Length: 385
Image 1 (cartoon, rainbow, N blue to C red):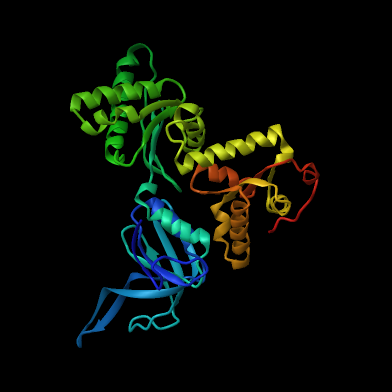
Image 2 (cartoon, helix red, strand yellow):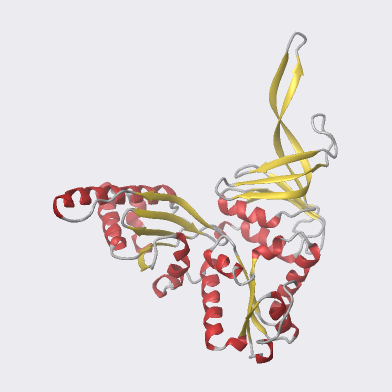
């Protein structure tokens, strides 16, 4: 994401009012924006409106571009379409849209917008810094594959994006059908090869993982090696050391978490945010089984542990911060600050990763404790924070 300018302050100040002009560039940037924009914010962007003009003997309708500032009241995110739709009241004088009239702004990649908040909290300031850092974009590519089915994914700091899905009908491998099987698999591998060449930017990608059940993944890598040599595809030949094989129990997207946690992959990508989330969630799940008095989830249990200064690692889903209630958001933000200032660590999981989806199933909040609190195991709390 490009940071065009920051108004009122050279850098955004926590607790202060300010504006940033941003240009989202891809699906991960759109996810970051979705987590930045909340009801009550002001967003300025270009939009289009149909205007009817009287030409004397006839009328003519044309679409014109106008710039509006909306007070955001509703936010709708379309991940597949890479679009965010904002609804709210117009706050700018305009001859085509009345002041105070409801309107919709559609945000999409490569379209600039200015986001204004009355008070920026620490998590939002961090999100702007991270999303505008060129080094924070998708840095791991994963191909999940089995016979006749494959997906090519980019795994970034906050989002897992399926760039292409390849499906093919493969005949059974026996008798006279063997020749048809070999031809179908070659065509299948060629489509995956073309997708890898098209979607992977090797200047950014640290590692390409080819994973899945069975032996198709090994055959695919062999095909990529041979085809890259035949075509003299320099991008693949030069980056061959970045490609590795990993086992997965399933070829579908939900198994990417399993792939990233495997030793052969985690050693390559240990510094990426996605890998750290997977590792920490795995540590929490292990602790629940091995020492349950040191692993709790749910707002009530986690807050009770925090009041006793017991939290070593705090795991939070970013979905908790999209609440329309500023008081609840402030409480979660303060919880993160308190844990970090107390020498603990806090991880904000992305709901666009499989690890974040799994954490959401555990209420979106969990903690690993410094010391056991067996008295909390049987305690009951209400569901709110």
